[in-house]
Length: 413
Image (tube, rainbow, N blue to C red; front, side, top):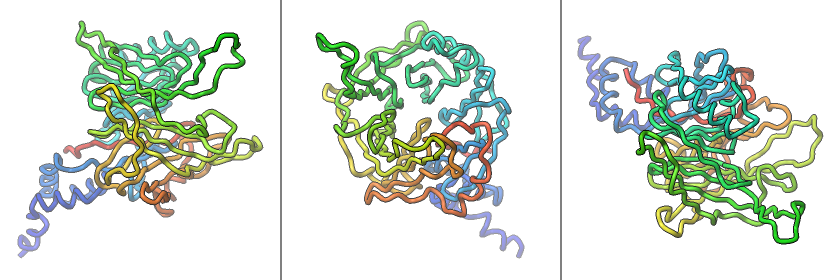
């Protein structure tokens, strides 16, 4: 009789459990399903290869992670000297206040931290050669973003240069460097179909004959650079065959992130899926003149999405799109991603990234889901789910903006 009562729990077909797991976009809920019994754990392991990735987590300033969509808070024991967290594939790279780097898997093995001494030394050397203001232990704090492929890892440094390290993160053996044209800075980098892409912004500083530097043009020129990375020659990584798309769409009344004379600023992100490369433009309204003691929160009002086409030909260009074909985008300065299932369709998930004057009490003030279909913004989390993350503000990343953390863990074990 007892065995008969247990049968419905232990003998569910693995295909049925796989269907249930596929309807659970939360990593936390998937873990809870696995621990019900040994049979469910075994069945879930069989279905792992067919599961879509769970929704990303949000990294808060106090070092905790918030899971979507339920808002569950996960606390990770970071080392006390950590200064910055950089998403790097399924892992994160941690910068330390002594100039060293380490690697952590916050999903599967958060207590295991692997030092990266050779990578840290190589990056410090290259950063200090390129940026004269960077010295010693502070140089690694200039890393803005990390993107990882099987062949190489690229580091965006202070919006000024990209340093590319060959081989796996734990066994980096050679580095190379790429810098944009003069007077340009790098907005974002992304990996797409094995190549590294860099979106740059600059101003047209060509001086007509008879004009001095006071008359240089303020006209912007956005460019998408395609970098070919190779390490075939004696394990020396090189950057070659750099192509460029000049015709980045831009309206005459747009304003750059650092300009101060208009009602909006525009932030841009590169986001890549398996077969599409997007540039996202985030329009944020702001108050250019305000008392210094006043805390002003920037508010996102709309998004525009452009897709790069003909990247392998001679007529590469951006095409504006009004649908994500049912997919969803997660954008932030340090980590962006495309999700095909589990999230709200045709929505752009964004988080609060701009802190001017004082820090807002609510880290989610300018966070939400922007619906491409109707232009409406919905909150990321319910008021109940937001309550616990609001409890803590101080921590290892107090002066850092929020960022997404892409969870590709396979629930091993």
